[in-house]
Image: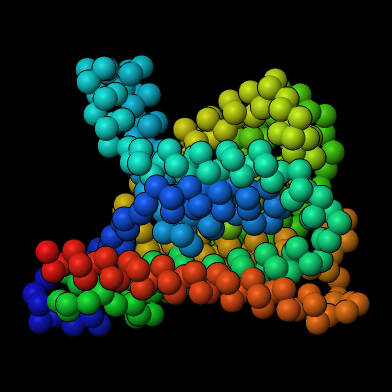
Length: 339
């Protein structure tokens, strides 16, 4: 595209949905440990998505790419050709310096926070939901910003820009449809089922989608299946049998979903990010502070000031993190261009 072309002609000159993916950011080991701990912490809370946190802290795309290479390595080992060499090639492409600290931080957080977090959610449901409502609401800005991202190569400008002009009617309709479907899904009443291999493995496969899809909460899905408390109890009591079955389900879920997500991010990045924002918007229903055990929404009652204060505080915390992350990424890009 010529440098003189305007951003307003962008849709006629580049693939609309494949373009606009921001560059991957550099991270540190300590920072990745903290990011993993944050992801692990929120995965124990019904209604909050680990994928949302991964987006907010800037490692979502890297994790999806790395998981995709791990899946491809296993496939090459089984099917070939050049099984050993193909497996090594894919494993070498995994960002292990990112993945290992993140996984370690996640595991550490899950095994130390699962019990206390469950108690907090049970003892103070309105307060915890209000805080997370504010956090997730602010987090919606992250996929929207990524969807509206326009690279310097597309605009012919020295700095990258964002703009609503890159979004089309189909993007808006897809986002609204995703929000509506998610709102309906999270409105389903919880159920109670017996924790058996037949129920644990499929539930884990579906729940792991929360780690891959921002907006969906793995804990919330487990709550819907009636396996939230048994799973937290298994983690707290180190029930190896239960956790082994759960791990099998998670692996199956990753294998089935991660390749699709990577393809969507590479070829339809813009509309994928808009859909993820819609999923996050629809999932806010689960975090409405006032609701009964059947998940029916209720009007605000009681002392509203503390609840509203927690929601505002949660919104402010995430907003600050998003702004700091955006400035850090912009600084790294300026440094990279100056080299």
